[in-house]
Amino acid sequence: MDAPEALREFLSYVVANLIDHPQQATIAIGTNLNGAVTYRVQLAQEDVRHVIGKNGMTISAIRSLLNTAADKHGIKISLKVGSLRDEDAEAAASPTDEIRTPDAGQA
Image (tube, rainbow, N blue to C red):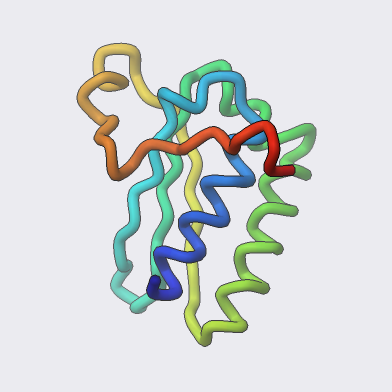
């Protein structure tokens, strides 16, 4: 597994444990003009607040962890979090993008 995909799996695990509707969440990977790997997390409207946290503390901690892991692999990352519009929620999810909920035995 390459570094961007490994970081996506890590991000997926963290986000899935914070939200109520992981089946509606997606993580898309891209590259920006600066060559940084971009992760775009799309969530159900009511889940966004769980990932952002009070005063942005939760998303700040997630970015810090992700940046530290990315530095270890020598890559730069960008993380964006948003909500899916109701009409786009079904169309945006695909089996390769879905956040998988961790098994109860994994914690």
